[in-house]
Length: 401
Image 1 (cartoon, helix red, strand yellow):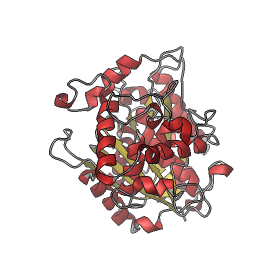
Image 2 (cartoon, rainbow, N blue to C red):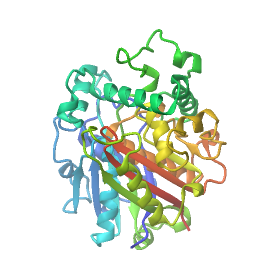
Image 3 (tube, rainbow, N blue to C red):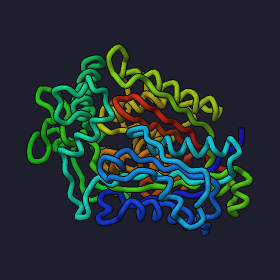
Image 4 (tube, one colour):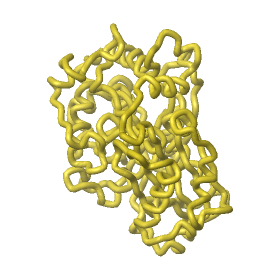
């Protein structure tokens, strides 16, 4: 297989894109990524765009056709992909596969989501409804906000089976808000919370579903944002004028999908996620002990704990403890979600998987903000999910050279 490198990464600030249209978002993402290395979009051979709500919230399809409107991309192999909240990761995999097939030597993976209107306002009930489409129809019955309800049940199951307390999971949110403080691209960069605030039911912090432990501060954000990666083979890097030593290698990747319904499967030990992560490690020739930076898909704090287990940094049931003991901090054993994670950085669904990989690449290249830069970052792992721990895209990254 050809070696694949990240030649450039670019993202918007997460939060609100205000009046930007979908065509404008895609163009800003592609041209922004190309601009990071002084390249033109015409230098790209292939492309893929990931988004989850482009039909339901933006009334826009055929995103590849919008990519083709960017000068230099017309007539090239491109498509849009949808894999729920793993759409961004799927877009990256799509470009990698094209490069492996010989359809080109350079490509761009774009992810975005526009969840608010032109004034930055959101319709929470509508968003809850359309996100619910990514669950099994039988599991939506009786749930007003489908995914918070589903993950509140998963959170309850995790706590019950492993003897984990609410405050242990709340600690994940506290750590991530602290990280987001230093991330200028994070949605919640100006908000700080203490463990006491994360646990106290008052103001905006409330139990999302009566009788279940999920609280507001356990949840990720409703977010606008875009992100883009320029990917290239060794030949592609030469064409772009980039040296391997300046880049980060996507040394391994894996993608797997479990049944959409949770019935009959163990979401606390997701087989597809573990299979995808194992495939990425095997392809990269690395093991969990080699990883010291990671971004995991913490759509809710319980997934911060489960994600830590999926990437192999903790045994089942020990993920929350890893955070409580400080091992996930910037100066810990493995800096996990140093970006602020989905809880505090934000969760623009289609952009999320791209941004996770991009942030890890910044870490490995020594380009993260000083306060968040992991010392001697050597290898990274990402775990991006879609649906009720259903679709999984995992990567393992190495510094170039």
